[in-house]
Image 1 (cartoon, one colour):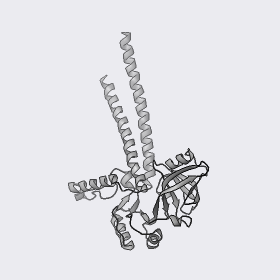
Image 2: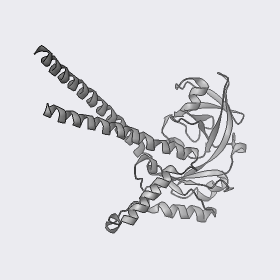
Image 3: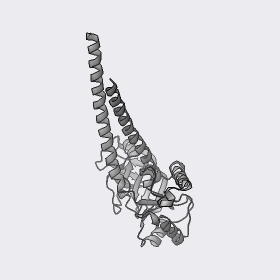
Image 4: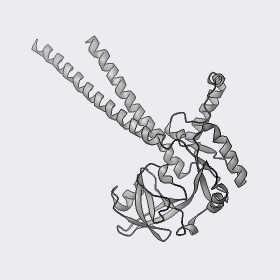
Length: 292
């Protein structure tokens, strides 16, 4: 009799423990996911026009042609496989360096700030920061790239090795062809209009197309989804939209910035999966307690 009571007591206590752990896990997951979405919503109206690798268009020419356009925020180049050296720790890594004349600190979520007027500052990926300095704490660390000294102003969470510096006379000799153009596209209907305007003004075309940041921070993205009454019930429209979304997420020729945003897709999958698991466990526990 005593053994039966002990078993019932242990089952009851186990149910309470599972319930508490599930509630804590669900609360933490929801809180983190809500914070993540708040951070992402501030950047989801940005879009990138990806240049072909053989575009042979310079940063100065893009800036001269597009600087007066309302959608234009700037452009960037990518100097690949540059040597980055930290004199204080004698650390050395090889990484891609993004040289930008736009305010990328408003688009890429970083710890710290790099203003586009700051010609002596830089943002390091967390992987470079840890490899060079063994810490994630910023205290004015200095690195050398292009034969010039730069000071760490911010850190971006990434498992790849890359960094950002502002375009200036200090690195003008290292600037290759433009890799991409940054746009503010608040209205989806202007998506193709801006793309065509860029190509007409610069006399160029691209295979990579234009992607919204929201292509990676949301499941479906903003562009090409059925919107009107007739489109909503059009199977082929949904099929094409889904095909475009999958292509955008899986194609391989992404530059380093697009791969950074691509990481958000897996962050969403991870946290949504954890939330779903907690809710499922909670549901099973409720059913089990009612039957017992």
